[in-house]
Image 1 (cartoon, rainbow, N blue to C red):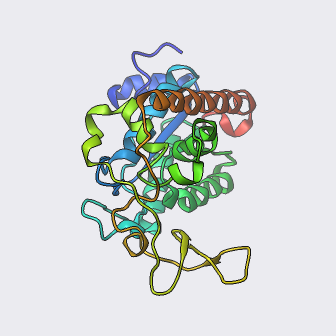
Image 2 (tube, rainbow, N blue to C red):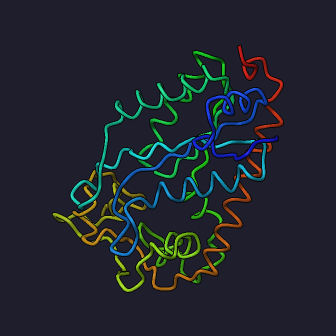
Image 3 (cartoon, rainbow, N blue to C red):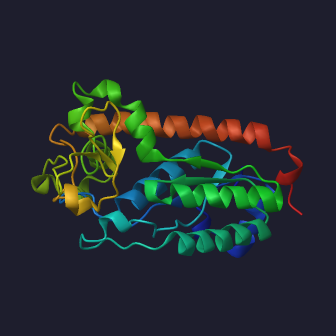
Length: 270
């Protein structure tokens, strides 16, 4: 693909049209604005989504769009700087964005969604586009991939892993060291709330049972500093491994998506 840049937001309208004619895959980064502990920026989800999208696009037949930066983060709403929008609002926004890109000639879409609270809306959008246009839509979740792909890097995954902990902190040290304030780092664990012993944001221990129950907490009910793990072992070197593995998976996924969708009838521009 011959383009001045893979970043659509830096292209003129005529260049975007020329890009669409080459039938690339369109990556749409998504995140939210929410707390990630005292040491990480509230824009971390978006920063990482765009980083992964840009790195993956450079190695594949893909371009990446300006990000969808606000998402569904109601669980963190009591922390300063967290800005949450509702599912219906996000769904309508995504619908308008996707229809706009389809009108511009992009028919193959992968969301690079880096926030769990958006997942239900991403799936909803994918099913709308399938019903309306016959499209198969993909999704890549960088933070979730990191949790799955980095377990061999830690002696005690259960202790290290968590929101605002690992492997997020290592990844941020590698990608955005200037925005990761190490001296503010705090560890954290879930604490009891109103007699419940949480094991997750919506999971609790049930006496005499081997599986958890479900209670819907707000984050500050059970994790006062917003952190749910021990990030004190974070290093840039671990973050470099995170980048290699997560971007590597994204590249493999995009390449397979490219191979399996390029000749499908729905992938051809009208």
